[in-house]
Length: 242
Image 1 (cartoon, helix red, strand yellow):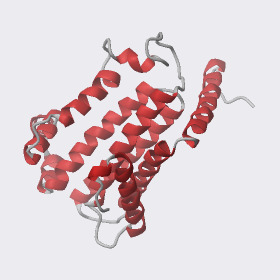
Image 2 (cartoon, helix red, strand yellow; image 1 turned 90 degrees about the horizontal axis):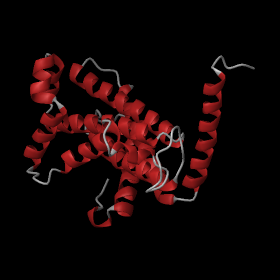
Image 3 (spheres, helix red, strand yellow; image 1 turned 30 degrees about the horizontal axis):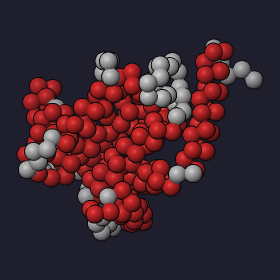
């Protein structure tokens, strides 16, 4: 039965689905990648639970909207990654990174949510542009290492902007030629899923701070356990209670 798509696009989709199976086989043998994906799923579940809370609080509705944005972005990024579009997957993760920083800012000062809601374009750019949000967070935390900038810059260089470094994510192997279309290669897949897990931990932590008391407890418990497992696995010296 015809899908209604042009033949070449139909064939491309078939190839993408085969690559997804290949990626699944790779992940099946890698507990660390499975943990990254488990904590990503848990963060997405938190986003889904938070958006179901009925409220007339317009500030909380903003957070719910941002939560839904992260859910959609994680889903899209994972689909792209498993289908072999690693650069495009990373571009979506940059959106998650920006949203994570904004949630962090609002978590620290909830009065900023209302200011963000009513700001015009000029006002948003003056106080809430990506660079302004990063600078505000660094000032708040006394952070002089510029790690937030470095993370944003990495996503921008490799995926966000056409430049001479952006082709690196189009190469199945270091030193090889760039290829057109999707491909699955373990190192690239691992890098993308690892960054996804790292962002998911942050998203889940920030969203959890906005949950009304008693709401979504089972989901919060699951995330808390996975977060602790994640820190114990990847940052054992920084492991902390959920």
